[in-house]
Image 1: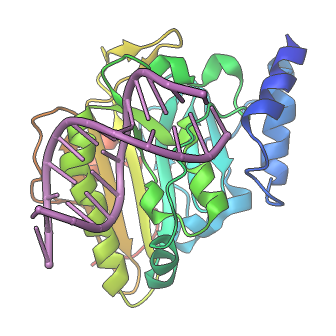
Image 2 (image 1 turned 30 degrees about the vertical axis):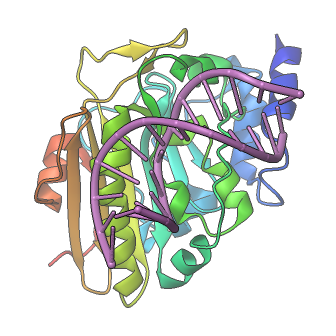
Length: 265
DNA sequence: CGGCGGGCAATG
DNA sequence: CATTGCCCGCCG
């Protein structure tokens, strides 16, 4: 069993994490092979990649605590992954004009992979999405990635949720594009947190029972303007972009305080 | 209309 | 593994 996991680890994360595998991540990898010895993790310890959170402040779950939540650091984004849904619960990025200009020259890698840093029982596999009728929808978009390593990492299934195909390539792509457009014109860094919202009786896909979200959200926070807003989109083929919702409304709908202690005008 | 960004599947 | 072709929606 442990040999299988070690082999999978070697095979499916080929040099993607050049020199930036954090101590935290290493602990998670080691722990994966002996999960019973793992202590309960704090809700979200992103010690090694706090730079993706405004003011270094990590979201706080007000109501329910996410089951089997594991923080994962990547070169250009941070994921709080759930071993229950086999999806991220949220993905945080910091983008600005410079990073997006670099990203504009990057080619999509399109190499999706199961993230071997997660225990097999807690992660989505490529087969789960195949023939499911759902697309593998990026939370941190590939088009935001400023270098080849970040681009490759963005195709981790830990950064994906099952998404209605036309939702993904239609209105959702528009939300991503609008967010890039805003950050291109902003005076400094813009912090973005993207994630799914699940119904209690959510559909699941594949042998690993990856949960299908009912809604997707994308929170945008500009610390210079001290403004925050969120896009909210139902995960259906018919969904259309509506007016963004206020930050407080997003907190109410998700039960997550994404920007604790930060000033929002 | 073409280009771009979101995907898919088949082929060696 | 990379390449190729294809679909979709949006935008200039």
